Length: 264
Image (cartoon, rainbow, N blue to C red):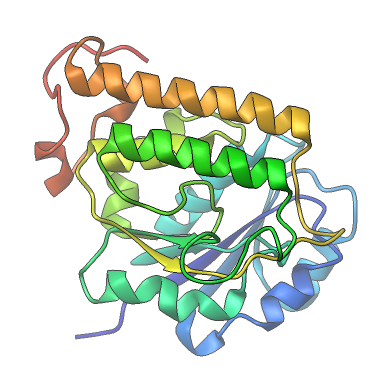
């Protein structure tokens, strides 16, 4: 059996200072293709991406992190990916861990793998995570675990790996163009009954790494609570959501409310 085609996608926005460093640490023997989607950067991101020989797609303006991911996943599927790994080009997550990220998928043990900054030993705060971000992360993760019926250590990581069938099954194109896209796609995966795994990854915080402000994080937290509420209403049958219904594959039989009129 041929090995799976692994495509790394990089949602980029003003990542000129860290893109090359991130790319150089990717384990090339485990990756077949690297796609970068530039979301209206105003720095040297595109020039550096061209120098590195990446497959590049460019947005004509800054549409948002979620919109960037939509293009990333769409183009990866078009390229024939069997496994898609999102690696932020800001070097906050360790690119060398791609083989560990895809291992549970290759073994058939998971459909989606999250790289958790809060799993295993070590203190995320000691490694630079702001204390208020750590506390809100733990609180929101606890809420999501209760509502989703899971026991994950973190939902708010940007380091993720998907198998092809999972991405084809979720209606990610209906999701937000903003940061809450990350939680919407997890809610879709949970709604479809997908197997979600996680591995421990170190956290890096430094000047060039992306980091939302306190106010932006508060708004993001409220949006996550709305995602969880919408999932709960859908799961209970009170108000079905079209974006939470699986589109195809074996997951379509697991999604609640199939055949029932749905909203959004």
